[in-house]
Length: 242
Image (cartoon, rainbow, N blue to C red; front, side, top):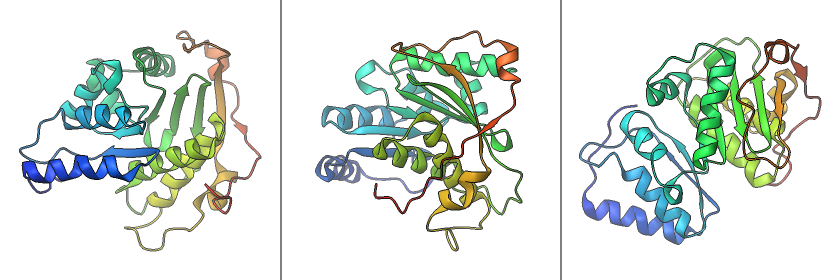
């Protein structure tokens, strides 16, 4: 992300007031922290938003991500979307297997985050929550631009939460949004209903079923991981009201 402009203290106060006055059910905090602003800004905005009953989705990197993930429970986002490199940077170690990635996501759940989406480019998205864990695999595509693909994924996941979709359906909707962004240059020409275009081409592999437990199984047996991807046949369309 480009660094952007440096906001004044008055600008930051206005931002906090605007968030409070929106009465939104969700807000998304994303991108790099502007020059001159504390890397704890997302952490503090999350605390404020949660105190007003608003859910928070976070897509950040570096110290801003670290500050938010290391925050006390009342300042933790509900949804966090690191890519694999960002997750490894936060942990300080390489995640070289699916089981290790799942364990890292589970660690974030145990801290109090409700949903973790780990994006891995062409390898897809691992989505973990108290419902369990699923891996959404996209089809092979010709990439037009990677700009905004992560933002689109977050938008799809938030929309899925608002609509009360299942874990698999959430992964499909988020991946559909991301695929639509990846296959276009910029915001022009984006589909009005990306899920309608892409949902039938996304394979979802359920990894672990969790019933009544906040923990996802850490040790994932290889045979489970190596099972063929199962296509989710249900069509998801944005024509349905959110």
